[in-house]
Length: 127
Image (cartoon, rainbow, N blue to C red; front, top):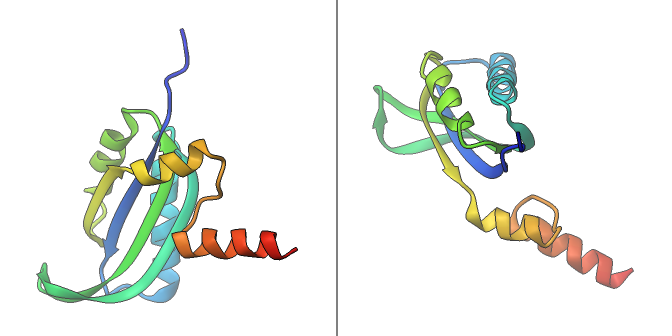
């Protein structure tokens, strides 16, 4: 049987502002484990930190934003979604196929923000 083609996904999560910094790192590691157990390969984890909301979510006015970028088969998002719903510290989450990053992946450009890629490219040109 042929191995399923993996796609690049992006998952945004918002953690409760009531957790402490050390606990936040544990929560991030726990979600990374969920992704890995679902068959995903983590490419990058981007922690934005505590951000204010435009409107309250579960009576909270802020939360810790964390974005995960990972390669996985088509069944992984469902498995991750089912498990992340059980984590009471996650206020919101969303998983999307990251088509923008797939284009860069096909061109063998490093993952990261456009600004990081631009900086890396200009550094290479200067050398």
